Amino acid sequence: MTDSDIDGVHLRPIEEADLDEMARFSTDPDALGEYEWMGFRGPGIWRRRWEEDGWIGEKSTWLAIAAADGTFLGVVSFGERSEGSNVHACFEIGASLLPAHRGRGIGTHAQGLLVEHLWSTTQVHRLQARTEAGNVAEERALEKIGFELEGRLREAFFRAGRWRDSLVFGLLRPEEVASDQPDGQ
Image (tube, one colour):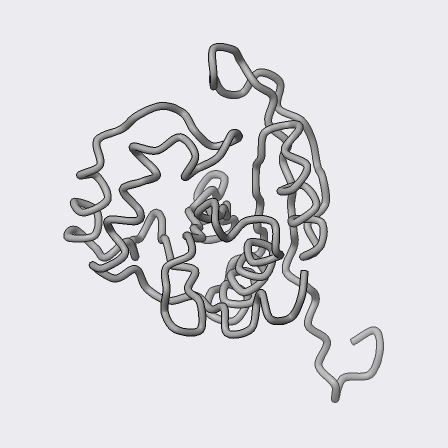
């Protein structure tokens, strides 16, 4: 990975112009990649959700990963996964890059930007991410931004004709220490 691969990469709200590229996630197995493709879906779901809430919702939010010039590279997402009545205590994050942008650190950088965004704009305490066992690139990306492997969910989902294990990674909000407080207070 070089700095030029991630220079100017940023997150932004999804725009109407992104919807055709997003529709590829429903119609092109290569667009999502081996570990995310779960079969064909109606491409209209992307526009319907955009018309409903612009992909910024109470239960889940998707943001575009964009190059410095605004070109759509993929998406990051987060959604409510809190236990019990602890609303906004835990969010699950994810990312999907279009094939031409994979393997250069852009996805890792984008997920790091999402973590920073969530720490600075929400009170969420825990972030988690799941990936299929064997998706080494995503495992490494999550570890690079501070996530720790917490466990394996055996046969958690069905893809490509068989049940697959899912790995769960977690990251807790860093403790904030007031600089004017003595240790232990």
